[in-house]
Amino acid sequence: MKFKKQANVAFFSKYVREDGKFTITSVDRRVNGTLKNVFEVTDEAGSVIDTLPRLKDAKAKYAEI
Image (cartoon, rainbow, N blue to C red; front, side, top):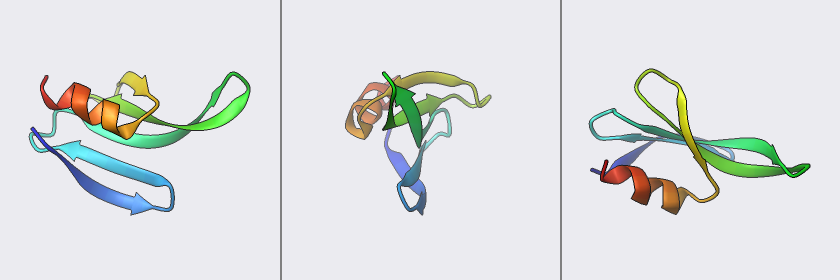
């Protein structure tokens, strides 16, 4: 399934899968003491399933599940 872009505010983007099962959100997190932009994958309930460094990786991994 494909992800569709829902919102675009500055550096924070939100993508939702067509069936609504997963959402990918761009967030800032501290990684080894430095602030990094990463992508969190959440399920329908809103709990974070995975955190990945690249949007391409997140889309590829959760498009087929």
